[in-house]
Length: 287
Image (cartoon, rainbow, N blue to C red; front, side):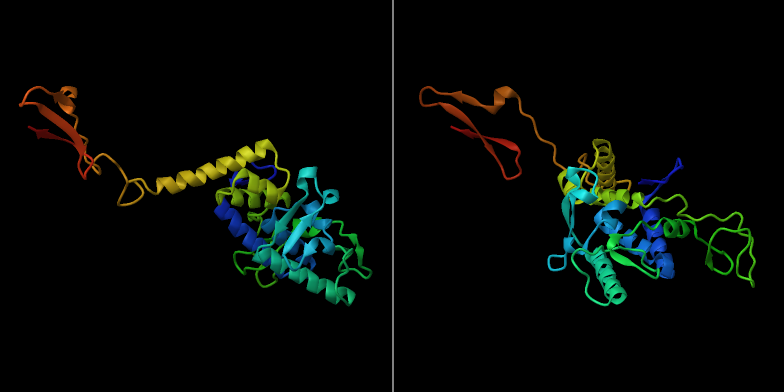
């Protein structure tokens, strides 16, 4: 679960996934929000922090191995230095950023250039300096609402900005209001925990994770196990794995009848133990 700033409620994973999909779709329609969209895409698929994304240079993007190396000078602690494999979504984002850089600067990106260059979208962008951030674009994305009458996306207002609509919007609020960019990292780590990744793998991918947060992610992992096991109970499906009537009861024999050995003379009697195919104790009398 991901907690929004200033809210007592938490956002369930399913709802959060839907919100992130909506966020990326809204951003895709707005040219001024492309950097925020691509940064969010990378954060959701790599667990990287905003500072690590802004400080990423092309020399630390391995296009052959499809990995990103997070260096110590861009991360929080020594434990934050790590190599992260790129999944298909993150790889698609990196390729899009590379194509953008090629078109913007007229050639392949140089190793010391930043993946997110400074002042992109302005008259004099500089790839040798890192971008200051995407705070304004992020705020606009997370506050955007949809008119229930005409479905037009817009910033909060008293009435719809569509002149042909003018629906009252005063009671409508974005489902993403209050969502921080850093929440994307927490959500990605929660997804790793729910996929049953152990703490060691989570640290190798996410870098420094506090003991308190690891305890939170372990709780998410336990909840996933609980849901899976609950599906096996009789209350969740027509069949169950109860043992009250599914196994045969074990027969108990008195101790004095289990092993008896008496020898002497021609009438010596021996009682030998053996187990049958069903695992039930049986006795054989030999005279």
